[in-house]
Length: 399
Ligand SMILES: NC(=O)c1ccc[n+]([C@@H]2O[C@H](COP(=O)([O-])OP(=O)(O)OC[C@H]3O[C@@H](n4cnc5c(N)ncnc54)[C@H](O)[C@@H]3O)[C@@H](O)[C@H]2O)c1
Ligand SMILES: O=C(O)[C@H](O)COP(=O)(O)O
Image (cartoon, rainbow, N blue to C red; front, side, top):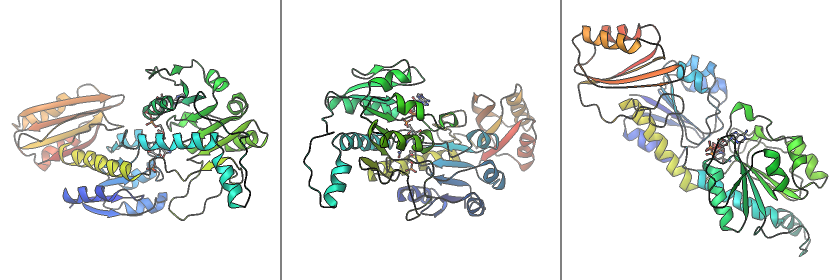
């Protein structure tokens, strides 16, 4: 029976679905360290993680049976995607399922900071009644600067405009401006005019330290700052400096340079004592609706890959969408993207008088992936012949 290990409190629907599909499923509440993960992955075929578990080349090398990884979240920066592909491991995520939950949290953060809710709450909890309107603003008519106009940023754009905000955005890629949103050609152009700046870039390595001293200094006097992307994107020492000197009126953070691996683990922040500060424990995607949808979606991707060799929505392999096998067996051949490999595969099958009734090939960069339905089960000898083709990364046969 194939084994699945699900970490980080992945919604129970995922375990339920994989168990129903015939997997022996082990679930754990927290994330694991590299050594703990290597130990836990012994004999495991499918791994489910969220944003806290890091899958390094050392983990991948130690677990040759690992066939696929499901990131039950959006971000996949916690997995060495290229190394995984070159070791024959497919990685999937849930690109849309929690985006709305993040957007609603950020809308909450914007209004909270504009009305100084954290400060008022703190004072009132300590017996200070302060109805002053000083530093408090309506969001209507204010300018929201969205950095990263992807699935989250663009949804936020629509909801912010519905609140009467003016939206500007900055993205590395060409993006369709929704509603009346205005695309800024440079980041500084956004920073100079935004009353609220919010980060929704992805976790690519080049975004480490993306928003620091210069960017905070470029923000409008009295603007607010929000980061719901990845903790390593923003320099919190610089943020504290510009809050303490009064340049920035408040901030909301949902992500941090280092985050606890499990509920109840200790957490400290240099910003904890700031009064107009919203600190949340990476809960942008933590709604029952989002987690339920993610659990179902990613579990299905893993099952489809395991049983059908489908790489639909894989984040690191060429995407081939296939349905049920309509012949005796299905062969999935993952290889280096080199000329002549598919011909050699077909030659070996032909030599065994095995007919190919359907064949799909996809390539992406250095990786090629072929899925074919064949007229007869493959002998171990034929499988080994396919594995021996130079450039082969992994051969899987469903028969
Ligand atoms: N706080 C949370 O719980 C939570 C929840 C979901 C996602 N996230 C994080 O939010 C990120 C964004 O999510 P998404 O679904 O919108 O991703 P996405 O890939 O749809 O959008 C990211 C956008 O950022 C742009 N971008 C990347 N680097 C940039 C840069 N340096 N300057 C300008 N633009 C840049 C990309 O071109 C892209 O358009 C995820 O990758 C994840 O790390 C956090
Ligand atoms: O990448 C994401 O979707 C978010 O960071 C959420 O991560 P989580 O599933 O660990 O809350």
